[in-house]
Length: 57
Image (cartoon, rainbow, N blue to C red):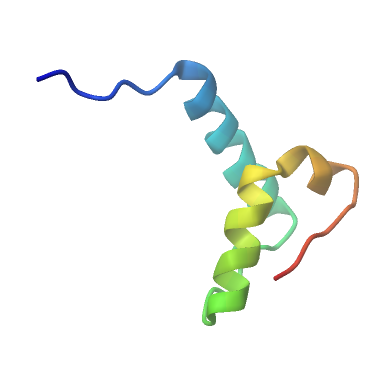
């Protein structure tokens, strides 16, 4: 059986996304499902967050 490999680009994308989301205060309060969803969305689409397009759930 072969394990699933994670690409370096994917890891870099997620790490940058976490840094951007944290700097824009998406990771400050994760106490409801909507704030957790918004944080995950901000991590995935971090270039939009840098353009000040804040998507919230």
